[in-house]
Length: 415
Image (spheres, rainbow, N blue to C red):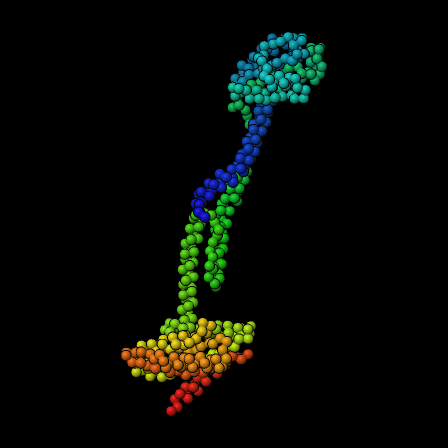
């Protein structure tokens, strides 16, 4: 499976997984801003219309004529340079005082006139301006002049038209809006962090770090090193670490092999003695399989070194170890204990079978002499056998095998 770069993963995650969250949160934020804008528009319109109506109402209470009221509205419009006010009469007022020139009603304003419960309405006109309309109701003080009306009926409609730029927003709304935007950004960043950065970057790196830590603490070499990341950069780190890991594994195996292998003869050295003994004992306990050890000492090894040199002595040891290895089985273990002393663990072997192994080795020594500088040297050795008995320690077996080996050596010295 091809890996992707962290940049690609981030872009894909943000444009795919985060897109839905972004659209949802952006929609909620937009709706909130619209609501706050609508509230600000209604408050601004309510403030302006209340101020104008209070001035007109005072004029009406003074007994001003209709022309005086029209002049007052014109005066207010001249002083309010950012917009204008319109006063529309209801049919009840028109019955007594007739129609007045005040501009045509929009569909929303006409609906507000005919609505029973709704008292105000705001809308954005085609030219981008805001129109805020509020109904004027008859109260008891108005009935002395408007004899055909009842308290609570609609007397007219006061509309203020002004540009959006003139809308004043309270500091509270600004602060609250900024808090909402901050929360929106925070939620979006957290979503991106959890679903992109945390999942695709930090979690794989933590897994990789934990495995490296486990590898460092463990005495065994860990074969598998992977964080299961889809990121190319992290995969490259894993790849290089795996190369180093494989080098460590090979070095570990090589060091382990060297530590248990005799450098001259290439058979096992005495470091495997206890492990081999424990393995043979456990095998005997589980399957009742006997085992024997054969202690072997190469005869006249010092004379070979003195007569032919140490190189010849080394060749004699290698030749002898090769014969022991060739006559043993894959389940057996040949060990060079040191100098010209060898030990062979024979799995599933009784006293008689161990003696058969010794006879084969002796026959091979006679039939395959060591050739050194055109001289054939027939090697000889002394052998001792010890068969495992329940509870016998490795030291006891070595003592028994060594004793028999020395007895064999003495017999061979006799004429």
